[in-house]
Length: 386
Image (tube, rainbow, N blue to C red):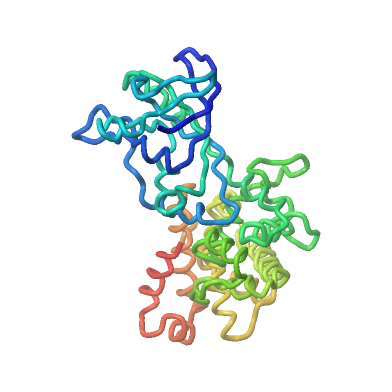
């Protein structure tokens, strides 16, 4: 028998019994009723193995927390009410009859905890509804999952700034925040720091999430894993330095250098657009999110080019970008781009085509950074990383 102390609340669907069970006990008595072609009575989506692995890694951390309840429906014949606010769940009979509680919400959390072999580590809040029909379970599932609105990534990154721990997100948030506020930055007030325009920032055209997300890609392919490593041992994995060009600076805590390089680049990007692009109404997308995303993609390549000549000044970036944008303006003036990730990638490909056309990326660059591959193959590999 599994004992559960509970309190209940009345809602239109009936009584909801709220309590706490160990993840181990939940795993004994509950299963997800997955909807498939062959099980039209199921209500749950198929488990995402990627999501399960992510939760498993998180559950293994020292500060893992699962505050939201596992919601289950159950048959009352497997439950006995004892003292006030206490019930017994007959897990032996449930196992014998193979009539498990149905997990309405929380299957990925439980599967991730199980994958991490942490079932005996977590006590989880639970909500149990009794003797419901499958249609009612489906309605609860849809209500919980269909009406959720994702939290703005800009807000999430901003909240990372409150942490006193060094994390990938906190460092990137701080750098972008500085670029948006410092007098010497030409993208000052261009960033919507919480995903929307603040008072006095009418020139904001790109979200904080867009820039922070792009910067993270220059440091790591898995921020959560790096954050855990920083917490445990401060030793991070080795990654390709030509792909993650800021990783070494991050490891050495040289945040000021990352900031200075990006300020030089985006000051040059802003000035080059002003000087080269006369018909600004035809190139307004360069001021939007896709323009900034594409500029980040281009930055990685131009940074690598600069390494060959030991250059990284604002003048270097301005000269390089001016050549690229002049060719781009002449060749792609009539082209339009969708305001999506695919549109940003297409814009980047055209900017890169201009860079190749004006020999910004010359044979030396291709030989060193593309090895024996042709530049187009290198571009294809580069695209895979973004």
